[in-house]
Image (cartoon, rainbow, N blue to C red):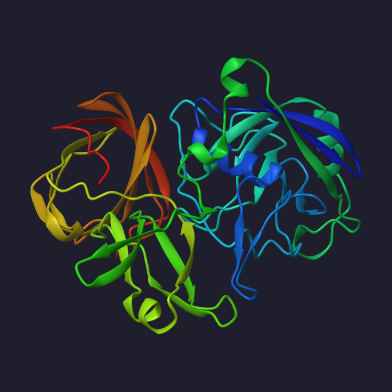
Length: 371
C-alpha cells in the first residue's frame, strides 16, 4: 500500500507499513481518503472529506525532518482526537525517508506526521514509524532545505494538494480503515419494542464510545442527550424509555450518533514479568479497579492506574507506579505468554533524569482479551 503526496513542491511516494502498524496506517489512510470522520463540536455535525488537502508543511529542520498535518498550520492542532502510539521493535529511525507520527507526549498523536532527513535514534520508542519514502526523496530533501523563520516555519510553506492511497495486492486491496479501532463516527441501529407497559428504544453500545442521542415526537423540535459516555463497565446495550412520547403523540423518533475512540480493556488478573536490558526484573499483577501491585528487585509497590490498548499483534500498556517512573510498555507477542517489549519512560520521577527507551522481553500468564 502506498501514499502518493502531491505538493506544491513536487510529488513523492511513501510505502505504508499496514502489516506492522495497522492502526496507525488505518488512521492515516482514513484521514487521507475521508473514510475516518471527525466530529465538529461547535456545529454538532460530522466532518467528512479528505483531511490533508490544503494543509502545509509547517515545520522543517534541515538534516532532521519535515512535518505536516496541522490544519491551522501552527502545529498546535489535529483531528480532534488522539490515537495510541503503535511502536514496533523492528522499526527504528535509522535513515532518511521514514514516515513517522508526530506527538506532544505519549498517546497524543492524531494527524501530524514527519518525514526524516537522516537518522534520528533518539526518536525510537517515542514516535511510531508507519512508512518510508520509496520515490521522490529529493523532493522531501528540497522541502527540508527551505529557508525558515520563527518556530522552524518555512518562509513559503509547501502545500499538500492531495494524498492518494494506492492499494496493490490482495491484502492491501482489502484494507479498510473502519475495520480497526481508530476514532470514527457511526450510527447504531435503533430498535423499538414493548417491555411490559413500557415502550423502549434500544441500541447496541460499545465501551469505547460516547453517544449523542436526539429525540423528537414530531420531527420538528428535538431534544439532545450527550450523557451516555464510554466506560469499561458500560452495558452492551442502552435503553431509552419512550413511553411518554408514545402516550402523548403516538410516535417517537430517535437518532443516535456514536463517537468512538481507541479501545482500552480491563486486564484484571494479568501477570507480567518485564526483563529490560541492564535492569532488575519488574513483576506486575493487575487487579480490579484498574490498579495492581509490582515488585522491582528488592522493592515493591502499587500500580496506581493503567491503560491497556489492544493492537492486533501487539498491545500497549501505559502504567503508573507508586515508586517508579511511569512506563509505556509496547508488547509484541510471540505467542499468548511471551514476547518482546519496548519500554519508554516518558517523564521524570523525583529528578530521575530524562526520558529514555530500553528494550527487552516479557512473559505473561496470558494475553488479556477484550471486554
